[in-house]
Image (cartoon, rainbow, N blue to C red):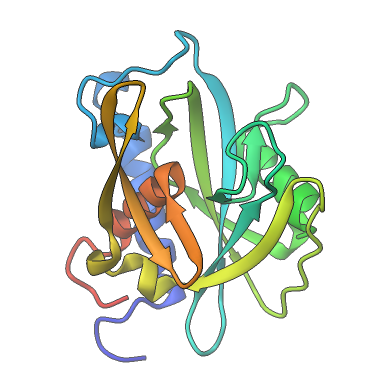
Amino acid sequence: MSEGALSPERIVARLRAAAEARDAAVDEEAPRRGDDDLNPGMTPTRATLTPAAVLVPIVLHRAGPTVLLTRRTDHLRDHAGQVSFPGGRIDPHDRDAVDAALREAEEEVGVARERVEVIAPLDPYITRTGFRVTPVVGFLTPPIDPKPDPFEVADVFETPLSFLLDRRNHQRHSREYEGRTRYFYAMPYGSYYIWGATAGMLVNLADVLMRDGSRP
């Protein structure tokens, strides 16, 4: 591996160091991300945030790591057709965010929790729609044989981690919504449009892994 490249060991060390620093911070200083990062003053549509969790699956291919993503089916009520991580609300029977993320990944894309090496969470992400999402980063070792739930998942695909960490691919787009201009991150990849909360969490991943100018 070339000098400055991110090995799995370095990825683990940086993610866990960031998680330890976040755990050590007092509540008002603990870092978080959200749709308001690019929209100062934006507040969630609900006063009480709904806890949710997603799995950020890094697939350790020999040719280079990728991130497994899904495209939601077009008929869903929430975020239809959008690119997302496997995940959803934290249910009462889930032990914690990690348990919820692993359960959702197994239900949505057929990845057994035993196949996932959990590394660490990223900063919680607050959505405009009122969710507090915990992104849980985990490693998957190929071969991967996804079995998507046809009701929720239209497509499962992988994107090179190097593409997602490259700052040149972190675009800022905007849309008019309810009479206001809303800004968001976007990372178009081939025919896939990665944007919104998913892109925002990937920017957080890049901030953690690329903080010293390392090469993806």
